[in-house]
Amino acid sequence: MEYLHTMLRISNIDESLEFFCNKLGLVETSRKESRQGRFTLIFLAANGDVEGAKKTNSPLLELTYNWPSEDGSVEDYNSGRNFGHLAYRVENIYDTCQELLDKGIEINRPPRDGYMAFIKSPDNISIEILQNGERLEKQEPWASMENIGSW
Amino acid sequence: MEYLHTMLRISNIDESLEFFCNKLGLVETSRKESRQGRFTLIFLAANGDVEGAKKTNSPLLELTYNWPSEDGSVEDYNSGRNFGHLAYRVENIYDTCQELLDKGIEINRPPRDGYMAFIKSPDNISIEILQNGERLEKQEPWASMENIGSW
Image (cartoon, rainbow over all chains, first blue to last red; front, side, top):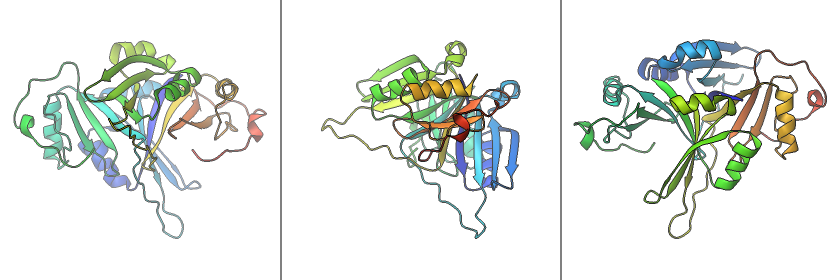
């Protein structure tokens, strides 16, 4: 048995790809549209996982966009507490968080400790950013940056 | 950037390990208890991912058990619709589903198509089981097995 993917439902493809690809840096590896099932599946991989994902299809993030019903109604995707977050590790958490800030992403839990940060997707999925390896030395402006909201 | 893990909150460690390890077959790779933070983190890997997970810490499933507060109160972990499921692939989906049935796990979506099945964790997290590679030939009793509940 091998891990394949985590599936998230998304309410808007453009907003989700803006967040996950243009801002967080994931890469679209494949897409499937079903006119009969009225859904679009978009598979993403972290940039460091793309080569592996091409060979093994894993690990991936699957975004499911369910098309509006014929009468135009859409489901509201609420959050639950049994799911916690998705975690990605990065080479330099300060650089990553600065890039996210520059792109307009709110850092809900800044990396005050040089190790851990949290942001949220357009559909309120918590994403944890972790420093690869040892934590970095504490550094301003991060060390005294306040939390914003929940994650 | 590389994928690290998906975190789920669990309401009972024994019931969750019974499900994820003894029944689904994942392997505990590490555990961290924080008396100060009053939580236990348990990291699991699919059996086919254990060797890789030892080297790279990925891909993992992180189970977070938050200890009851001092007054004994616990949070109820409800489900939300923005999270969909976790997916694992297996060598033979019929064998895997038969083992799960034999261990008392309900197959919410049986692998009628020889390709896809769904079960649920004790905290109502949907788990997708996918046949590795091409779908298997349709076969009874699976082909005519009914869905049970939702997933």
